[in-house]
Amino acid sequence: MSHEHSAAQPKPGPTSRGIDWGSPKAAALAEAQRSAAVAKAAATFKGLLDRPRTPATPWLVIPAFAGDPGMPRPIPNSHPFWESPNIWIETPDALGNPVAGQPNHVHARIFNLGAHLAAPVKVDFYWGDPSVGLDAAHMHRIGDRSEYVQIPPLQVVDVRCTAAWVPLFKNGGHECLIVNCTNWVADPIQDPFEAVLDRHVAQRNVMVAAAAPGSAVAVNLGLANVLGQAVKTRLVAVLTPAVAFSHPPPGLSPRELAAQVLAFHPSGQHTPGLGFTHHHHQAAKLHAALSAHSHPFAVRKTALRRTTGAAPAHAASPPGHLDLLSAHAVRTPLIETSLQPGERKAVDLQVSVPAEARPGEYFICRLAQVVGDETVGGYTIVVKAGA
Image (cartoon, rainbow, N blue to C red; front, side, top):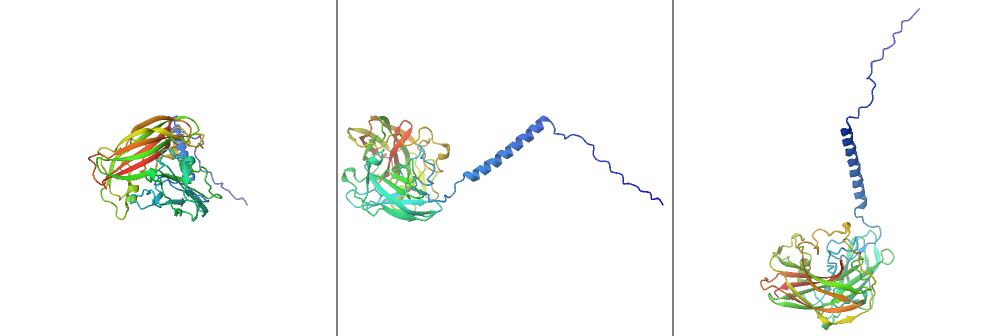
């Protein structure tokens, strides 16, 4: 018996041929799109790696300005690093200036931006004669012992120097302040007295005064060479037009109001809700003259305190922070002189308030000492028109 077997016939398939890659132009476009997608993915990944992260150790910072995260250092030349809002004085003076011949207490707000407890934190307070150039050789310790505190992770502590500070009458109480802090095991200080280089250090060279419109404030400063070689140095004034509070914030003391004025940006950028107005009439006038004598001191520096040249791109000014090099700042050269190592010359200044100034307006005069392209020191004078 035979069986007839009918095999299924295969269906015809597609004709075998090579892959059509299209025209050379289309292939180049596809390759460019692929490369762009790879580059974008790589940039996104790198951004995730480079974003600020909370360090696993203590991360101590005395911010040099509002929004300063403590890194990177050195602070760029465009920043007035000598105006730290985190150093303030417990003083009988309403404007926050130290009072000569009376006990004053210095405070420092120290931040721990790390994820671990900072303990113990050693804090030392120092004062120096009014000068636009300061280093360890100029500073005098307040009290005979350090302060010790514990700072929890992601917290800030207000450290009060328990030793009373009695400023000298010869400077009218207008001294400069430097605060050093360190956690010597997990987060030690690297460059004491160097606010430009080290986040553990803050400096405050600020004087606040009141003067009637049309009158002047007299200030005596030192112009010092803290370097290890003879230098030519310039004293440059950076003046901003008057600012005032259109609606003064309630509950702020005159000292706190002056601090808010210092944080004001001449472009109009400032903390929301403060009610600032920017008056574009004439800024304060400055007259400066070198005195006929100088004072020697011991030199402990051998080189410039910061790298020369432009500030690195990653050290840009934070939003709303004053840029001393911006187009809004009016720079006025005052003095150019040569200084030997360890030489300190006296400068007599007159800050004149415009006659047309309105009571309650503030005038900011920032003095920067420049060597080459480096801002090596500074001093700020805030004058309030009226009582």
